[in-house]
Image (cartoon, rainbow, N blue to C red; front, side, top):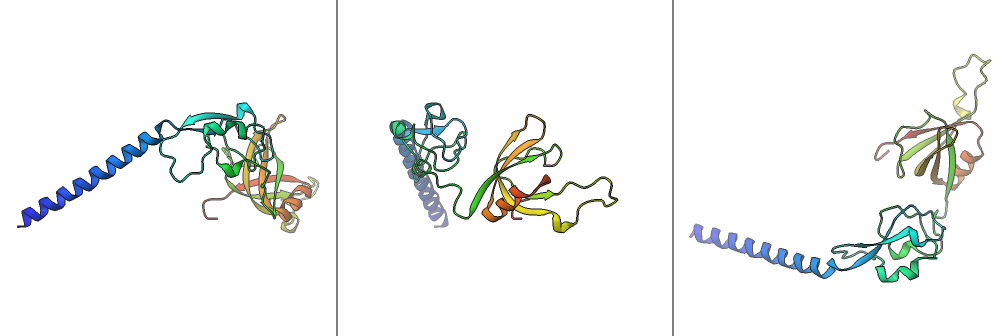
Length: 198
């Protein structure tokens, strides 16, 4: 009796598995020929999307995603990016149109960071503490400036580019008030990368 029920359970599981695989294969075949638009190179928010900024790619099973089909290329090229577009990402309808980035209450600023004042390998998406310390008079014996004079803010890295004279230019997204305070502060910028959840 137990052997029969065990065989029935096994047969039932195999039937369920076969059904799932069949539906998955049918869904893959249904979407296999569909082409969608992908971003070929970074496009900042507010910039006009050009022909070279998008390409057509095949994507299997894009269920649940509001992707822009290749046939809509003419609707995308010549319009502005609503948000920053990352190279290699698939285009979604909400990413094209009037700029909506940065969001209300946020600001985007660029800071010049001297060599050795930011972690190596800093990339877009990293969370950092921005510290702006006034230059220290070398004639004084103090080790550094008083903590009250150091500007501090938490930000997200948008992009990192190498500066011609050495160092880096780091574009940051942060609260608007903190952005104004950091941008108006005179002194050397240092970035401290935060770990997940910090």
